[in-house]
Amino acid sequence: MSKRFVAVGECMVEMSGGEDRQYRLGYAGDTLNTAWYARALLPEGWSVDYVTAVGDDRYSEEMVAFIADAGIGTASMRRIAGKRPGLYLIHQEKGDRKFTYWRDSSAARLLADDGPALNAALGGADIVYFSGITMAILDPRARGRMLNAIVAAREAGALVAFDPNIRPALWSSDDVMRSVITSAATISDIVLPTHSDEAPVFGDTDVEGTAKRYLALGVREVAVKDGGNPALIATADETVLVAPRPDARIIDPTGAGDSFNGSYLSSRMKGLGLGESATAAHATAAAVVGHKGALVDRNLLKLD
Image (tube, rainbow, N blue to C red; front, side, top):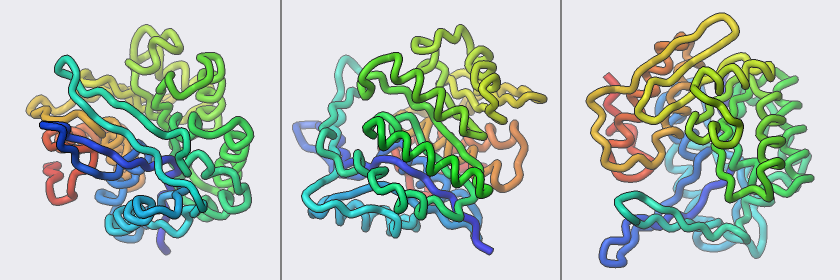
């Protein structure tokens, strides 16, 4: 019997490049990126579905086709007349990548407006994955519907995985952000935070502090990413530190954390241990940062 990995969130139009004002159009988003790598790394017998909302414009249709061509299910996407995808532009500034967003009219903001449809989309999932960005783009009532749908899926047997992916600019206030992130974590089995995002918001002094805070909420497993430093993987009974690959050549860091998540979760679903899963996740992230763009073709993932 097939198993289902279901990711929920926002895919956007990405304009990258910018050399001589020439930009390359693509499609990406944190939860889609993770679904992409889960699809690439999960064995046959697993399906991967993406739940979002899109408009009725040309770019929505191209986005859906792009996702489907990657082998990711699109049947649960809502189509909303008169809406379109959000857009972001990547440019270089002072030697670093900067992002500018246009997402106020994004169809994905309405992905949880139809509660029964959302429940149906998550029904039968073996693992449900969502992020802090998924929660941030929704209005308060839609956040409630999202949490309720995830709780229902969990009660039906789904494992719930959550990346807080903290982006303060998306939230109305720090207090709301902390409250929603904490609430989302309390209904999750696996949380995959990034320490540098968490520290200024929650006051964690180190990766151990980040892990302990989520474990104290009842989370079963925490995988704390920390850039080029070792990731800390923790449960109530076990803690391991796993260093990134030392031979990683960084060309473009976009999607590193998302690819880590997709690889880590797929490894756990295949029955690998905490350390083995983190090692595989670092290998995937090393392959991704060695190429331009968040989404790297499966054939370019050299994980041995």
